[in-house]
Length: 312
Ligand SMILES: NC(=O)c1ccc[n+]([C@@H]2O[C@H](COP(=O)([O-])OP(=O)(O)OC[C@H]3O[C@@H](n4cnc5c(N)ncnc54)[C@H](O)[C@@H]3O)[C@@H](O)[C@H]2O)c1
Picture 1: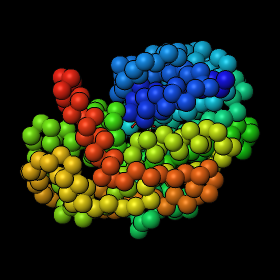
Picture 2 (picture 1 turned 180 degrees about the vertical axis):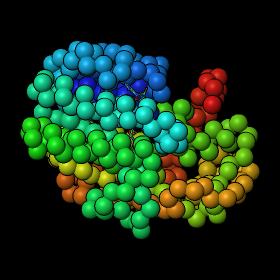
Picture 3 (picture 1 turned 90 degrees about the horizontal axis):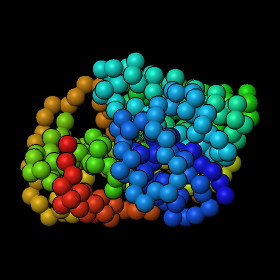
Picture 4 (picture 1 turned 45 degrees about the vertical axis):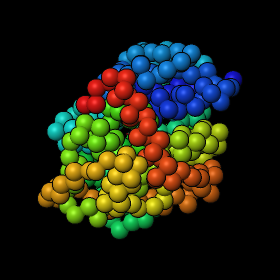
């Protein structure tokens, strides 16, 4: 049995990972989450241990780490725009929180630490495809905080022999993202609420959309590997926003009210990840087409609406 601590396990990625690990068997799961963004209600049929609280609470973290072999660190303040408004909050959760967690892991003798990092927010405005070799140039306190976690992980591997791996996720979408403000979740909620889709710019901007099941499969592969360092995860493709909107139109069968407005300053035009390093190191192999992923996400969002859950 592998005992895994998933910080942020009540969130979008965490709740999907926990469900997959539970289905796979062979894992005892501990979730630590302060429910600031996610909710315990997202962990349906969860039979592991749930601890509610802040990752900066060292005593609580110590309890959460009892007999744990592997840590998957997803807890973070994840809102980019809010990080610009309240950088201190982002620093507390993401940088100080990760440092405290790593320190407790060191004391507890944890050998494997998987850290959630981010793609575009770290590298800034560069010509894609982005590789791990691009020099980091974060554009927001959120991006800077994630870069700091990568630095800490690198130091804990080099200084203490902890096998840390940082994974730079692209734009993740899928079931479980009702509380998210990312583009797919936001647009699907707008469609359900019969509200317009606002595009900043002409819609040619490209992003790398990765379906949650493909990400979770990658996380499980990483858990079982001994890869250390930094890896990018994504679909490996850039999709223009106009193409995403066309797919949403086809999948939902609705006629969409799309409105174009001025570009927002500070926004990256286009980014997508080269994922060759992750493929070579642990066989990362995302397979879900955007059309299939959007269809599965739409079905799930419609079910939430039918259950009366607020769309936000
Ligand atoms: N979803 C994406 O597209 C994406 C892209 C790049 C990186 N990431 C990273 O992946 C990880 C998971 O993202 P997500 O989409 O599931 O986000 P999420 O907001 O759904 O989940 C984050 C979880 O962490 C919890 N949390 C926040 N601060 C905490 C604290 N101080 N102590 C304990 N729990 C805390 C929240 O309650 C929430 O359940 C994050 O680290 C995020 O930065 C996500």
